[in-house]
Image (tube, rainbow over all chains, first blue to last red; front, top):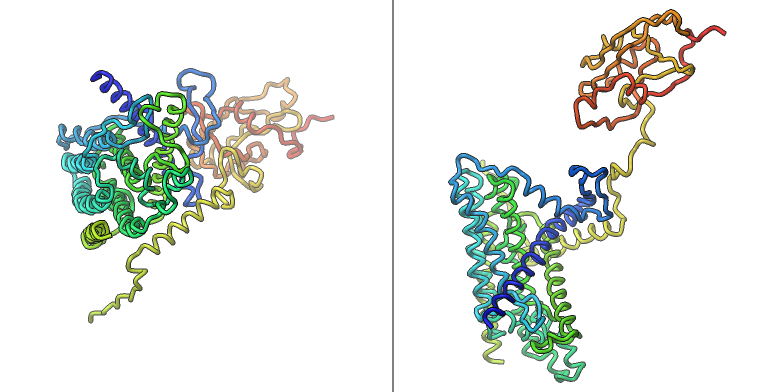
Length: 386
Length: 176
């Protein structure tokens, strides 16, 4: 039994990290470049050939892929570049920082339920009861990577970048945590997979009518699709969603909150002194954190792997052929939702200009924090009295 | 004297900033949509599309040597282009034509004619100064090479690029 648990966890981790998240990261970077180009009326990277003539072949390999080979080329470039460590840095911490930036982003994925059931297994690496608390705890470790990078670089701009980043992440973590509290009160549960099951039955939090298929099948009465309490709760949920999403932008250092690496003032911010694979680790960590954030939003507000009019899966039924197909479809739905949300992140990035630092702090401490706090009491009142 | 700058009176919608974010998102989405629908005019996609067809007659590309209608190399190795070349990219080694040659009266021909394309500035002075109309700046602008030697255009390469230009100078034509 223990061996099955260990082996299945390893298999799920390998699938999640090497099968989905790392490819998704590299193609998000590509999408970022391509979408930004399209938004700015440019073409973007639309051609990449494989220069196998360097390996002694007669001609380069030309596949009709457009620019889809670009992430592979980027990865090759990062691996082959010179790993340069400047003489003035604190070596140990300088090498430690990129790992600390990458590891928390991947570690938070452990509790994200990325599918329903498959081969008699729950599609989540660690089905723990502290779910979202674990995510917040680990995600805030991510700031150490950035702080260490800035401090170990022993140079002005990285230092500014890391100082900004730490203060920004600490202020927005409050709003992030507090905006999740109403959601947790509605669920009455911290386990992320149970939260998705709840949403599958009662409708997604943000779109409470998505349990309409159950009414069609006659499992619940039509009047239960959109109850009065749900309608009342919808306002605090939307508030929560807005605050949570904005805080997630700040937490993952995305524009309009990318002050830690604002190119125009700080060269590149905390990773100014880094090159090659160490820089790539920061880069990957940033995008992996984005994917974790998007997964969390999908799990909390958008119903996770659930889609209306698609039957639910069960632990016992997931070994049969239909159970396997259904499990795979659920995994696809989950990552499709995450990709859509990543697209939204990219879209916002190329729309909004960067905030000024005092505006950022004011927004975090004077507005989002208060809204999230008041929201808790509104939700509590609705839950208690209606 | 201090000026007091009046702060603009913002409406509530402007203060909460969200409507302008949505408006901005709509604008960028419109650009994205037009681009995907192919409605936006973008710049020329260089290696696939080139502006060769619309290049002006006076375009100054790579300097080349030309032959006349009899296949005679027009250059008489007077070395004027070598002297006028501002970056000194041209090197000519003249030699005498043998007496039994059909064009013996021309007397000289370039044994070697090198143009260093890493130095050439495409000024066109060689073309202007040439009394025999033997050197021309053609329209090739993508002169690339992976070694320095590849960018050293020798006589053979220059005639390859230049080709033939008939009916310009008749004084050397053989008598009928």
